[in-house]
Image 1 (cartoon, one colour):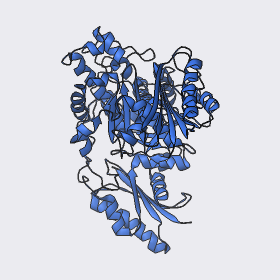
Image 2 (cartoon, rainbow over the protein chains, first blue to last red):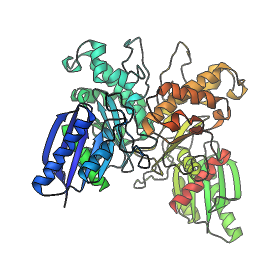
Image 3 (cartoon, rainbow over the protein chains, first blue to last red):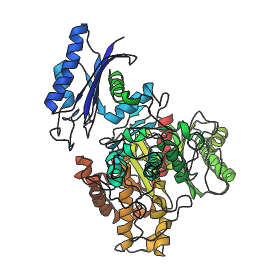
Image 4 (tube, rainbow over the protein chains, first blue to last red):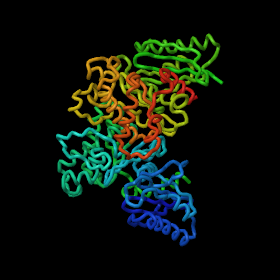
Length: 297
Length: 297
């Protein structure tokens, strides 16, 4: 028995929730991401208010944050947002500020690692030890669970920034990643769709050729993730993946691209349950933060 | 105290060793990989002979095998070489045959996961929890250690078979992978170098433009591995990497390709100790098998 706090710290908005240990949501607030001091103050206030009103203490708080972040617990800047291009947020001590304000242990990871953990506990990856959660929206990012644990390694994965074959005859668009031009994110994020076709992604009709190309780029990236991370399942979330017509196209192309090399019934014959939508929908981020709190505490 | 057996089960040759628990080699044999029955019989004979001569029993045997292999311990074909194109070896029950012949527990993994574990225990990745061992030779394969454990997931990584940008104006070579044509292995393996330039790789002089192109392709692949697996170090072995002039070129290009996005002093300022040669040289495979035996027993 116990109560837990979760913070989905996004570049656009923060979502804060309180749940019981079964992830039943007892309180929730959402507000835009403004400057760090104000945003973290609002976050702390929400939890302080809940605890004083309920006369209860939270066991732990999980923060699933936009990045890049410092996940090295031995580092002096653990729990910081580090080299983000987001104005004002560079080198922001998210975890230290919240721990000091609340006196509750705070556990911290990337937004996508949090979402992956949440999907593993309550969503589309229950019972699996090795899987990928990929979000394709304003940016592209991936969370990875390996042997039941979120993958950190040197820093954390940056799955949107891999390079893929780019046939400029079929797709002369240069790409829009400020760091890499035509990396995966530069070619397949929401803003890339917008710039390539001249209209926002959500205004492109479902039978527009944009989606066949989009599915092709995503399938190339998934094939790379399969060859490097060998996931037991891949979960695709984010605004672009609200276009559900993409799923069958992506599944078909992944199998074609791998061309029988990776021999797995799961991949070859059960592709519909191999490449899937998130089970937690738009609560994947905040419940992912709860998964971090539960895991740490 | 105890004695351990290691089998480097390669597609060309088998290397069998006996060591103490400090990996001191006490006996060794090497023989060409012929048909499965004969090759596994020779393997069993070597260990049987050693045990009867020394009047000692082995605690465990590790087998680091060419693949693809079945690593799922819940599977009926665990310890099998599965869908290999190598004639005669498809669906070979390596582990069951050796366990039956020797009455000793046998632990099994890919050759590259074995080599990675060996490098972690005694070689170039000591003290690290997350790293990659990549071999670039007749084929290209990668072993991955995540949070101290070899990565399996759905099957196991197939790191040679990712697609990379391929500028056909600069490099009109079609690639030579029978499954994927111009995947990483199809463009950068030893046979690819041979076919592209018309001479065996070892006959190309160190200042030949082949090496600049080779370093570029390898650097693209390493950038992908950094963005997906976030390793703390990358170890590059195999015949092609005996060309040591490749190392500085690869390091420089990896940093250029990532273009400051992955903020890590280790990667940006200590690149010489980030992308390195194996510490165990040509014993990486057989000592990797010993690492498997030690890990399992």
